[in-house]
Image (cartoon, rainbow, N blue to C red):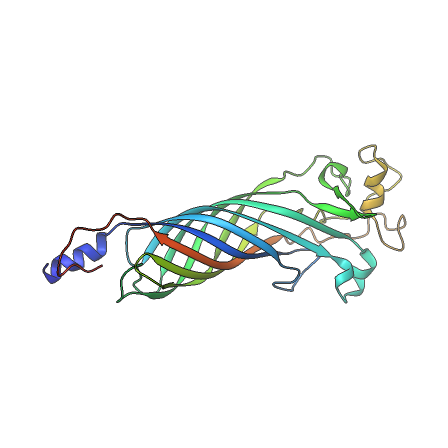
Length: 258
């Protein structure tokens, strides 16, 4: 194979991979404003990647994780006073584009390592719950901030992030990645606005008022700030990926660049 042929092949090869992600997930929002990896929970995912070029690839997949926050786990006086907690499972379907800083391809000894960036679009589902008397109670139906309408539990997010890819055999590659998800909701933790008037029934359920204001000053915080509606919630996935090349074996060529 001529050098020109090898370069053309390099630009136009097709590679398909299936993969497994094992790692963690966490969130940043009103109950955890700043601490990355704080209260991280186990996460897992599966993916399919199509690679038409050594420098870029496209992938789709689904991730399963959970996030949580707890005002009692901070040293911030205002959070300790508020005294709220939540947890939520996260199910995410995503499509992404990846850009490799270096030429990379599973099974190619010359191009076996690269840092990369990724950017895409996700649809995710969440359902915040609070621990009350050792029971986990769904929060969205209770309208704890007196919302006129229930917020949607299925939303869109923008995943992006960084990672590293490397070959470990002719058919297998490993990756390590960290990916923030920018969301357009402030209710992953069920906290966003102000304390409503507890004398007004939100849903006809007594738990609405109880779980709305769990502070030591409960009932006296009407219209006081409960959360920060200006900033939206974020969730994150991070972990190790195991990627397996599923292409059929190419025809033999003594000069073939693979």
